[in-house]
Length: 69
Image 1 (tube, one colour):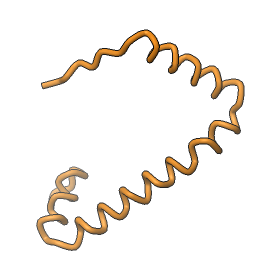
Image 2: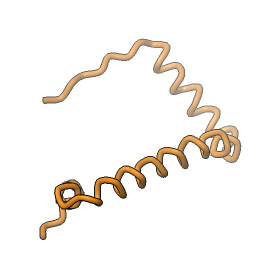
Image 3: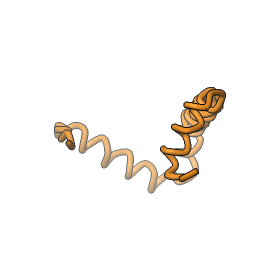
Image 4: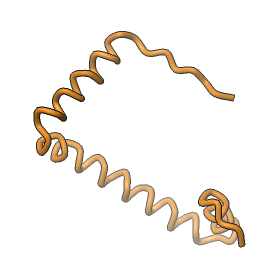
């Protein structure tokens, strides 16, 4: 079941502004987002490391990655 998300016009305008900023400042936007992206990657790694400590967790990782054992 797919849930439809309704956005208002201001959301679409924000996306357009961000796309314009990225086009006009190809190096600046990366610096602005780097900390956030790096933190997300670290949290994901920590999650998988914790999950891999149990047999059930290791099985779930294999399942999520589509790997058959």
